[in-house]
Image (cartoon, rainbow, N blue to C red; front, side, top):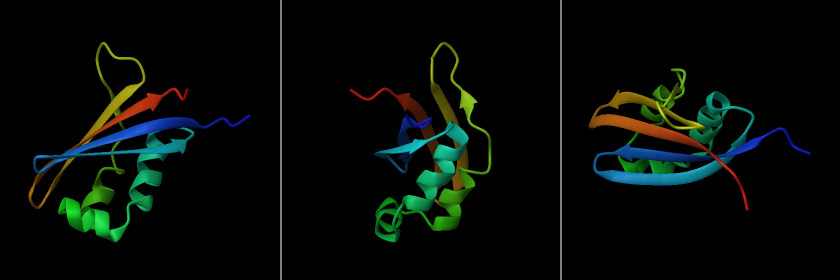
Length: 92
């Protein structure tokens, strides 16, 4: 049995919402893994550079008040605020 959880990553940036999922041992590791798996075409479509996306992995995720298994990180990119919500997702 794996000790990894499935995390849903929800990035809000420049009026767009980008959603993907990744398996990882923790929200912190999930962000780093997620950033490394985003391909260059996706980044270009979102209007981000690799170094801008990597900024999200530098801070510790903050648990959202009154929510279970939900965290948030944010940082600034050239074109505005990047807000990433991380949700531990139970698979069906």
